[in-house]
View 1 (cartoon, rainbow, N blue to C red):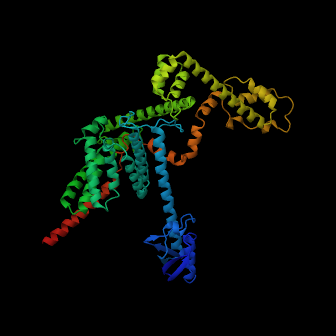
View 2: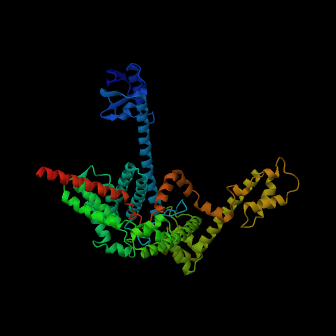
View 3: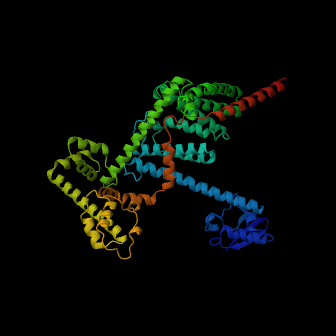
Length: 549
């Protein structure tokens, strides 16, 4: 038995077994001894921390409560107690969600970097601002950057929803992911992260100042001191203005709170000038919208192109063409993934390398044969080529392909037989019908043939009650069945471990991003902040003038 010293609503010593008692049991006992108060009105505090019920299964010993520990019992209203309980539950739910975000980002980055066969109908790739696929350092670097960027996009989504606390947590996760990568790869991206995190760090001014210095250094490396580099990358577009305005605003805010009023005025003056440049006139907006563009798109184009109407219109048409091209690319990528699933995975569970497959096909090898050679040899091009040019191995590979094809066809036929028998057809008739199935015949066509041969009523079966095969999972031809069988096992085990809901959320976040999304900043609140700090500086000047007079 252990002793707990209770103070507050009831003063005394409780003897109990820490390994058996929960927080809820302790609260109920203290409430009973506090003149019969309701348990929801009791708040228990130990070592400066509120004791939480959790899932109700954790014992006091698991929470770190020891013999002779001191527990403070404070009283709150029942409603307040319920509110506190709800708040704690919400905090726990928030923590669980953030853990899911991190786990899903980790899983996605691992699957889409290491060459594994995607279990989704999309593939995640790293691209530069020109939309070209890039390879950054090692596989570890690639994975770290991909994970950091996914978390960054998720944090931006949280910011738009005004969930600032969650956004800070996710940005911190992103920073941790980037820390696993070669620093040279990160110079540009960190400048954006530093700016976002400074928004939440003004209570720690020394930290905010350091981060702003890093952000300025990173932006200068990225954009060039005269912005020439970013203009070249973005084909003459001027997207950087809003980002630099935000940087100067934050520098002015930090300088003000550090008592550096002259430095604050300089930064705010420059920020205000850029803010004025970013204001879109009604006339220019109306002109661009008259060409059929939406207000948000027109405003964005004008803001990113220094209010130049001609360049803004060109920008919008270019963006429209990029979106159309991206849609075509996405369709092609989905088709490639379906093709990869037909070939199966290598012994190390990697997908067949399509680029190497195209090279072998260009030489003159049959596609499925070349794919199988690569699959067996872990995508080693030379070994695959050696196998394909060796008559004995080539013949063995072809026999293996035919054997697996027959087995897949048998599985598809058996599945079709069982489905039709479950509808009430006689098994012998179904077997005969399926045996005569043409290679590309669908389930619906097989069913139609059975019904056309139908003479007496099927025992106990109403023809109107037969289910629509189009809604059945086995409505597939042998080709599709073989594709499913090739990926079977890998996708099943992966699905069991996946947090599909959270992974889809992260995928949607990055799907909506583009090369200019970090620059696309709505600056209304920044303008209000500039005016607020000019007012504070004016008040400071007035006080200094009065004290000197």
